[in-house]
Structure formats: C-alpha cells, structure tokens
Image (cartoon, rainbow, N blue to C red; front, side, top):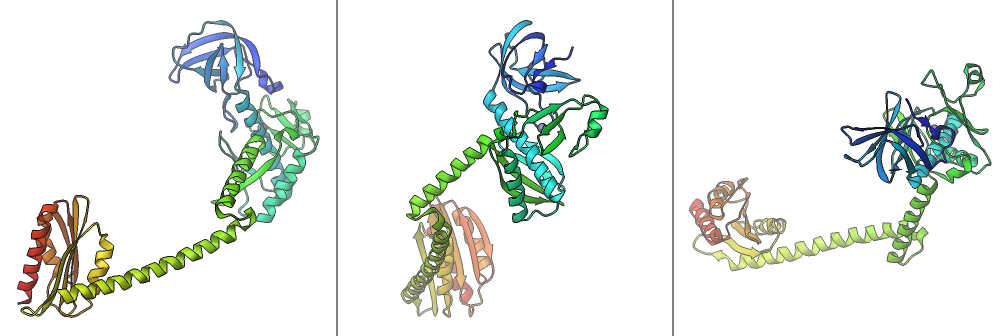
Length: 403
Ligand SMILES: [Zn+2]
C-alpha cells in the first residue's frame, strides 16, 4: 500500500512517527517503505529529502510505481514496526525557499514579458530556469527581479489546492497540469497559480529574497540562474568578503576597485613591454660580445658555440637570431634544465649550410631528436654527458660544410 504523503498537506513536518512496512535489499542500498512519510521523493525538478529513519541515514528518496522508496545504506539494521523519523530540515527548507522562489520569479517573467518557463533545474548548489524568450535585456532582468521581490515582500499566503474539474476550470493557471488525476495546485496569493507536486513554505515572505545572478542565451532560449533565501544571503556574504579583501589589498574603497585594476593592468602591460625591450638590448649586446670572441681568421667564420646552464630555450633562440643577423656567423647554443639539454643551431643568411640536417646528426649525442629549417633548428635530449661532443661535432660539420 502506498504511503500517506505528509508533505503534501504540511510541508513543515520534520519529525514524525511511522510504521516500517517493508525492508528490501536493492542496487542502491536498503530499500525501506513506510506507512506514512514526510520524505519528499525526487520529482518535478526538486531534489529529494535527506534525514534519518530510526537513526539510520536516509541517503536518497525516490518514487517507484507510485510507492515512495527510502534508500539507506546496505545491510541497515532495521526491523519492520514503529520508527521515529527525522528530516534534514536545513536541506529541505533551503529547497523549499528555492522552489517557491522559482514559482514567483517564473510568474513575474510571464506577467511582464510573456516568457514561459520551459525548464527548471534545482540542485544543492544551483537554481536555474529556462525561458522561451530569446533575449532578456539587463533592464528586463531588473524589472522581473523587482516584481518578484515585491511579491516576496508582501503578506501573500501560499496555499495548496486539490481541485475537482469544475474548480480547476475556474483557476487562472500560469501553465496547464501535466497529469490528469490528483492534480495539485500551488497558489501564491494574488500572484500565481501553478500545478506542482513540490514542497513550499506557507507564505511568500519566507523566500526572503530572490536574486538573479546570471543570464545566458542557450539556443533560442534564455537561462536564468538565481538564488533565494539563505543561499542568497550566503552568496552576498561571500561576495562582500571578497570585495573587502580586494579593497584591503589595494588600499582603496570597494567602488574604486574596477578602475584601480584597469590602471594596474595598464601599468603591467607597459612594464612587460619595457622589460622585453631591455632584455632584447642585453641580448644584442651579448651577441656582439660573443661574435667578437669567436672570430676565426682561418675559416672566415664566427661560430659561437656555448653551453648556458638553466637558460630558457626562447631566450637562446632570440640570442641565436641576433648573432646570425651578422654575416658569416653560426650559433650553437645549448641550454640545460635539470637532466635535459636543448640545443639551438642557427646561421646567417649568407651561408649555404643546412642547420636542420646538422641538428639531426648531433641530436643522438644527447639521446634526443630534432630538426628544423636550413637557417634554424632545434633539438633536445636527456643525456647531458654527450653535450660537449654534440657541440664539437656541430662545429666540425659547419666548418666542413663551409669548405
Ligand atoms: Zn512548486
């Protein structure tokens, strides 16, 4: 026999006594049925309740073939008979606030813009509705939020009706029922009439506050994310803390934060640019010095062959470029990082030597692979012991190619 659903008439029952009428082992855990229950099963977009049956935690509540199944841990030590039951009230009341806020916000959007709610997603973290309207401007969002909060800040009662067909026909429903039997209508006094099986507080004021926090376009619809009641308060608290923290970090008032961040971004951009210019200047100077030290009258070449411990590849590539901006120059620049080595091979435009080919021949000395264009190539490997041989061989191959 199906359990009496206590939450349908009174959403405030949080402690109750019931008879355990069935205990079975299922895929999800121990499945328990009661003769009466205040546990709301997951349905209509509202997550299920949590709580305790005879001090055993209720992990999930679902509806199966018209029966409410309470899922508890596997091998739960329960026996059929009377049991004291208790809801996780904080969770339930939060869901009641979000769910009721949804009715009110959906009604406000419908009244103002004819935007019907076609989807509802309520989880422990998020509340979203999908609306059959392509665009919601900032002004429209503000207007809907204001109207919804006007209803919240009113003495409007929330009533539950189980109308017969005649009474139902008289009700100004926002949307038609999706079931034929046992239709349950939730009325937000002077504001909204909607078919719903969920749990709601007794008056609109208990929703506390409705705050829209994000609107996005999804296909041809608009998705509105919002927070109600205690969730909105917690969000306000977190955001307020964040602003105060930023304000203290920057030593300015909270209203000056965006302008100050913009100034910091500009300063940072300028500093990066200047740093790059100075780096390049230093590298040009270093290139000049290395070239002066590497003149070889016999071959008429300037071959710069060096190992630079812990120097990044992109810096060595830049240095090689500056060296080879001069005629008859070649650069064999190796950098190390821990146990690995990387080698940049480059040459001036006036030399007819294929650095990519040379690179392929020297890469095995450092147990690596590499290659590149005739003018610049790169290889890397993880055998540092072969690095001197790699540099010597590269120099010999360049000299040989020049002859
Ligand atoms: Zn509802």
